[in-house]
Image (cartoon, rainbow, N blue to C red):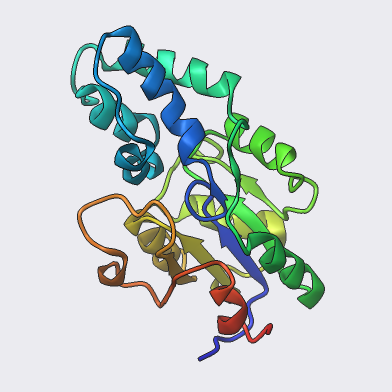
Length: 222
């Protein structure tokens, strides 16, 4: 099965374009150790990585956003993370080939993430992708975050393409909701972090992929 070739394809960052889970988990490991708490495995924290500091602090330290102690923990987490964002972060297997194929086919691509833009840009730069990306949109770029459609619509404007001729790929149900709200086709990345209660096949995505290279088959690029 193939889909209509888009003018642009946008990726979520964490858990879709790049495997950032170990670097996101590292601050939690350190914070638990300082508090004398038993270690948690990376795999236990991995599903919460797509929720950012909020999800990781909730899982790793048992503190929710509504708790009085959340904000100091969040600042501590972000300071630690910003100091070591590119230790183990890497593109998912097959993603370099996907990006090369998109470039070769003249399909613009970019990144729309709920992670703050000041983190997204250094990560893309460190991965050698910043200059290739048609847009870089973070959760604070527009004043809205996914599932609101504005970050995706802003990405389409930056890439100079019509939103309804774009595809969005993400590993969280919010990504699919945001894609549809922006009138884009939405693809669920089942290989990603996929946190939340519902499994990817229940998100209402237009398509489901089990690995990045499946995108090439959907787009008729291999």
